Length: 449
Image (cartoon, rainbow, N blue to C red; front, side, top):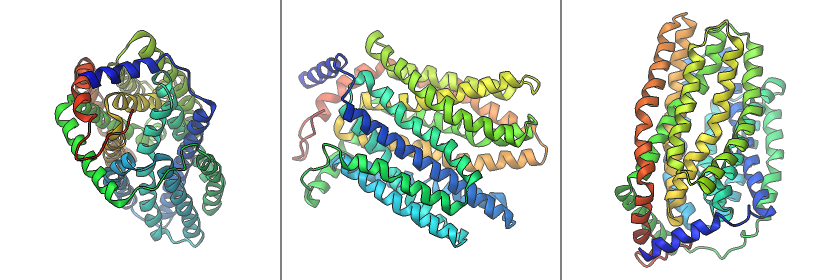
């Protein structure tokens, strides 16, 4: 218990420290730019390849099936790259993932320039590998440089780039040719790479293969023990699946607004792009700052706040679905509210997980959350969205809307209940884990927090 007490005292003392140095926040902005460029590229790939294949008469289900399969790439590689990120130097791994990302971006531009649509799946596959290495390393890197009173805000800033990048990619795919989009994204990616190369911690001694293998064994061992002994961690991973199901709404919303609410294509695309470009980043920064203040100044538990935020997110999605078509202003209000809550809710989930997890398995557990979200939200989400869109095309409106309402109500009522239990158990689980996980195991010393 002495180790746990020292860790808790050190963590609490950091709440009174400063907000982080300028270099730390420049690093956060660089990571946010990377997320923006990554999501912009993903949107350009999805929209451009899907539109080109539709013009060739390819069945829509045949388009969504490869997209769903590609979403499982982070699932496979994340479970491997997460523990590796716990052993290697995180800035070095981030730069490597970014270099891979730039090369794949240029490859996508060459593929589209030669109109080889059947080759697009190859760069998208390896792009998933770069994403699997990026997210766990970025979250863990930020947690080591910023105090807890600014950590949730920093994660919100990083993921706000994803929201802005989605809108940027969609607008670019409407205005530019596909290969021009890829070349532009690759040139913009040089800016965050240069910032990451100037990181203070980039120069470190190399890690030998023997120590890496020994460290991986140690990481897998204590990760399995933490999942067995810490119900709160398991419940956080479960709540990730709830957010994954809410992601289906994001894929389905545009088609539903056009078909069910009789809103024009131009108004729908412009409205959703503005939600991602303005409401998403602005809500992420403001709500992220508010969450940090509630945690460090008032003493709220992140897990309990996470349960309430997921309930609010699902509530606004349900209200948007049942709002009459005549109340267009109210409809867009609910859509903007859910867009503003989406990023801070995901950031709060990662913050709650980092708050529970030791430093030496942090990337591994964050990778597990990415696995859960990608498997449900992106993998099943693409297939479910395609089914719902086909039902809308057949003018069978009641069936898909009822289905979406049912799963939203189900997960709002049942899926969040374990989080309230986890919020009460989080302190007990943290005290239980620290003495067991923060000691030398198999000859490998755990890094200091």
